Length: 233
Image (cartoon, rainbow, N blue to C red; front, side):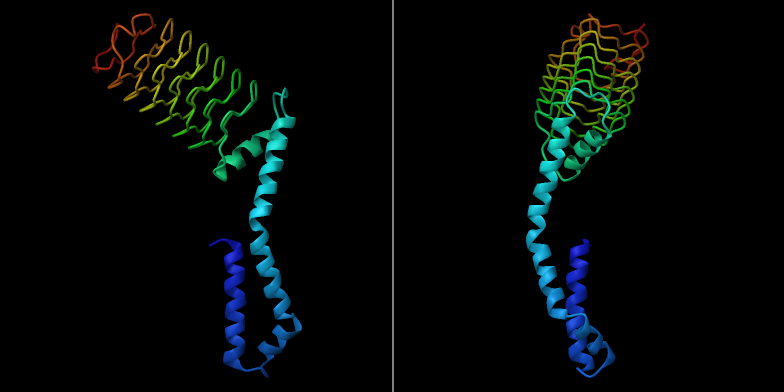
């Protein structure tokens, strides 16, 4: 239960308690000394102003992100991005190229059309995120979680996705040319129309992936598990 509700319930209980125990009780006198009415007014104002405080926090978070442009490693930007997503604020068109965001938690984030080119997102939680049309070229996504993530039409050229989990991910028409995808889990992923020119898929798991043999013809597939479950030689 949010703190504000706890406060409101506590005030209501206190008022009811006064009526039950009587005005001459020690409990009642204690409440009188604390100015109960002022407390109730303060609580009401706190509740009323809560949306404005939330907006102000979001404005400040975006200001931090904007101020960190061109800076590789900014803990303030890291926290601002993560906190905005926690509040379900859309991160669409986020501009953070070259940013250090390793291990960031952006589960279910809306990063449609975001620019994260050259960024470090190793070990990041991007499960169920929307990264459609995002620019992730040259990005580092090693060991990141991209389960059920929408990466359709995204640019992942020259990205490092080694050992990442992309099971059931949507990679329709994504540009994966020259990407390092060694050891990735692509089981159940959709790769229809994806650009796989010289994509490094050595040891990758493509079981049940929706992709044709022809689309995989220009990729490096040594020891990869093919969509039909067979091992590529």
